[in-house]
Image 1 (cartoon, one colour):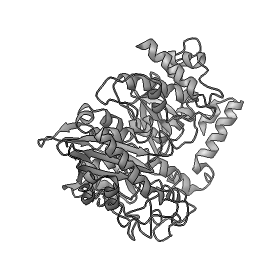
Image 2 (cartoon, chains in turn cyan, purple):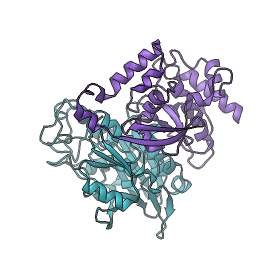
Image 3 (cartoon, rainbow over the protein chains, first blue to last red):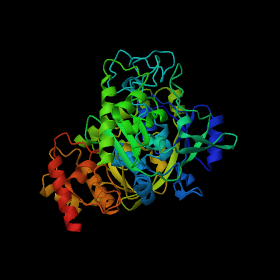
Image 4 (cartoon, chains in turn green, red):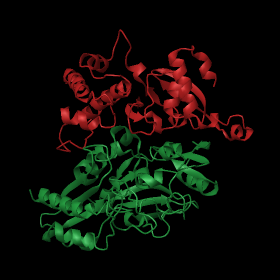
Amino acid sequence: MRPFTYERATSAGDAAARVARTPGAKFIAGGTNLLDLMKIEVETPAHLIDVNGLGLDRIEPTAEGGLRIGALVRNTDLAADKRVRRDYALLSRALVAGASGQLRNKATTAGNLLQRTRCPYFYDTNQPCNKRQPGSGCAAIGGYSRPLGVIGVSEACIATHPSDMAIAMRALDALVETVRADGSIRTIPIVDLHTLPGTTPHIETTLGKGEFITAVTLPRPIDGTHIYHKVRDRASYAFALVSVGAIVRKDGGGRIAIGGIAPKPWRVEAAEAEMPRGAKAVASRLLAGATPTRENAFKLTLVERTLDAVLAQARA
Amino acid sequence: MSSLSDFELSRRGMMVGTAIATTIPSLADAASPASIAETHTASVSFEVNGEPRQLELDARTTLLDALREHLHLTGTKKGCDHGQCGACTVIVDGRRINSCLTLAVMHEGAKVTTIEGLGAPGHLHPMQAAFVKHDGYQCGYCTPGQICSAVAVLDEIKAGIPSHVTADLMGAIEPTNMEMRERMSGNICRCGAYSNIAEAMAEVAGERA
């Protein structure tokens, strides 16, 4: 690990300003992803600002009937919150489908959204990777691509976003609250938080320099059966090959977001109109324009079959 | 490397020395003044197994390395050092975490419990006794992490924290075999003692119920 200087943040606004003006500075919260990457020198921050003491660890009701989740609420606490279990079961289910108990105890809400891809070539510093080293090429295309993306990807990068929680947040239309380096605040709909790789896969979000997530807000609860179905190579503690986060109403309509297939939570509102017509109809709209590799083309079938299982579970 | 002088030149001491040489990257080029100047220290105070501790550390020091190399609590093990195996599991402020994936300096004021704090020969923690009784280990390397995790798992079930296999998110959670297995997935055992570990946990959960 490269040496770095360390300080504890005193306020969110101050932390944002310090990260913006200090070369190589990064926030550290749970640290479960950042330290992992620092050990292999994929991440090499020169300065860490520890935001754990900022007290952004509460879940509070909003005036609109939703919930405001502090950026530092741990994944375990979010999944276990009684209001989340009752009104946002999809979120609770997605959280406990991710990582291990130890990691969920440390990982934070904002950190979960900002975690990096698990593409094996991003982790291997001996390999080219446009995300890690812009312009160096993509070893995944033509390489081991079985776990990687099939849609929203580009010729520069086929990495996926690994989060389960973000899939639920996308289906729920969560809002991301931030404070910027100049002290101003803004709200970003989660659909606009993550960017597609295009020719700049090293840029993963629309956050500005030093911009700091303070909370994630959930709108009012959405009626319907909440289901998170994750398909993976092991029964537990593995990233999704395909995951389906769904809220299915009695009339068969609802919302669907897919994980494991794209650089961001994959949701196509037009595909949701097809829900009463079944999984095949939904999948063909969701996956229109997909560009899988030979190794991961199976994900297209797997999405349809997982959707079919989810819609059947909702009817049962 | 003053911590080394506290150790006798025993097999364990040799192993610790080797671990340091392979895990602190700056050691190899310690002769270069530039790399020494680059190292930044920070201080932290926390409680480990009920005792207050204050350390001045290279900011890079993980909680795991602070426990093992600075406080000489070598019960906590370094396996993968990337949060995948769970050998480094300790309990911090009542929650089990991977001590390898967190910096020691991030734990100002925390209460840390390691395997040494749970029990010792002569007065074993019930989970330690159950692991012995049910043969919940073979080589034993993952065992301290398994036991710290297992103790915390029963607390998580009692606190109503759901898992991936919890059928009803709103109901009481039973300490079933499936719950134990799911919740222990962050602790790998290369010897494959899993079924015996789950039995040890079931016994302790039964006694507490």
